[in-house]
Each structure stands twice: as structure tokens, then as C-alpha cells.
Image (cartoon, rainbow, N blue to C red; front, top):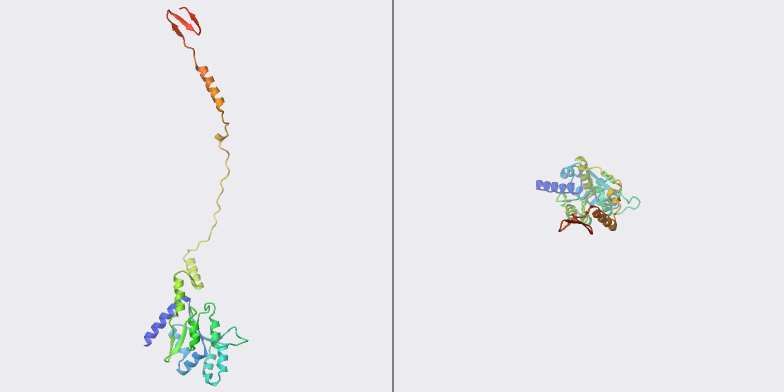
Length: 248
């Protein structure tokens, strides 16, 4: 049973690492309900969870969670002591504390940029978290900590990424870095095209056009120069030149 649980955890961790850029040390944000469940079931969060997630882990909570546990009295005193051992992350409710669930939801706004895991036993909070892509959910069941399978919202987001409808920022940076390492990115060089210099006019086009009348007169004059008068012989031995007859 333990081996099967580890396989499921490894598979789910691979999903978040590859698709949403989760890296060590993993940031696990816990609320009071998770700390109380760990206390009741005698679970050592610091010792057991890093081995289950397969890497270095940082545990944290918020001031709102600790304030909420303090307000609930002695029944949750042990859970408060556990929460106080974790790092306290800054939230936007320093002056006006809110409920632990509202505070944790505010910590994963805008696409969960800090890559938080959320550990809670609050079912209402878990339902709201599942409506946000890329937020791993941890809970305790049957004395064991369990990493929930990716939500339908996370699966739909990954499907959109695969169809190039949406590319997360961390993947864009990774792709750009790989292209630079492989020398696929070339600096854009703007080539200046040389303009052709304006040349002189065609010498043939500069010749004056001859008129048709001039051409005809020149041709007729040439014909007159080349024409010769032919001698005609008349019977009786006379040769006629022009209109006169000469006796031979």
C-alpha cells in the first residue's frame, strides 16, 4: 500500500514540476486544520513530508492562521504550537487579519507565482483551491498525508498549453534560454538596400525624329540622281535622243 501511495505521489509531483515549474525546496503552506489533524494522528510533518514529496521542503504559514488558532482557545493550543514552528509568510492582512482560509486563498492569487502547496482539512477551502490551476493540495487521511491528484482545472490548463493556446511565463523563459544555449537566436541585422543611381538618358532616344515629308523628298531626289536616259533606236539606223532624231 505504501509503495502504491509513493508511486501516485511521484506521478503527481512530476505533473506539477513539468507543467507548472515546481522546484525544490517545495513551499508548503499549512493552515490550522492540517496542523490539528497531524497532531491527532501523531504525524511528524517535518520528518515525513519531505520524503513523501521526494525533495527538500520548506514549511510555512501566515499570521492570519496563527491569529485564528489563538482565537479558538485551548482546544487548538497544540495546533497553534505546531504552526508557530513554521516560517511565517507575509500576507496583505497585517493590520486587519482575516480567516485562515481567506488568507491562504489570497496567497495563491495570480496563478500561484510562489508555487505553494496548500495543506488543509477544510473541505470548502479545498473546493475553492481546485478551481485554480497549478495549486497542489495536501490532506491527511487514515493517518497518512496524501497529495491529491491534479484538479480538472489544472488538467484543462495543461491541455490549453499543449494546444499552444496558453504558454506560462516559466516555460517561455525556459524555451528562450534553451534557444540561446543552442545558438538558435540570431541578432536581427537590418540590411540597407542600395538604391540604383539615376543613369543618363538613352542616347538613341535623344535623336531627332525625322518627318515623313522630309524622308519622301530625300528618297525622290536620290531616285532622280540615279536615273539615266536610255537611247532608243529607230528603224533606218537613226538614234533618238529625247525628242530629236539623228541620222546614223
